[in-house]
Image (tube, rainbow, N blue to C red; front, side, top):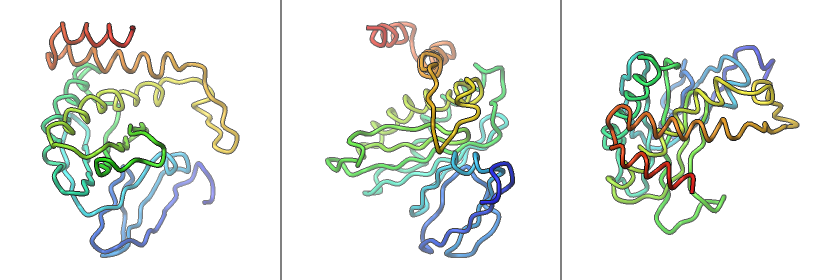
Length: 220
């Protein structure tokens, strides 16, 4: 790593049958090697990669190319099955944000664990990044996973606005060596979750009764 503001290239050896799902651009490699390029050190550490057997779908949402890369241990859940639930949410968010998404590319990286097999952290969930979001969930019926991903994706994708676009100084100049947390959690999580719910009722994906019920539960 030369400098956090200079482009960085990383070369990764992997099994020939694996695909590296990430928001970073693949600029080279061969049957068992990938070469990715990141525009800066911050972009590199903000771009997770999942290597797994290929199960991908690419959808166009307005101006953005969106990758869905899924690992399902039993093979029951496919990326193509998740498109029908993810696309309406992203398209609604595009309209909600004025007709254009604030990113040109985005990646949903979805890792499904076997039912009954716990994660090292002790819980499932998702983590947002500037151009991607990484999901660690438990495998189940495809329709149940699709609904879970839709609900979580609505929240995680809106993080590209808060805090990834609108944030405090602590987030903008984040110190990975000596991290200092921001006190604006109400903005980053509260406003994001409200927007994730409001976009769905505004664009007709859920009923007003459903929206009010969700808000009541969260405030309670």
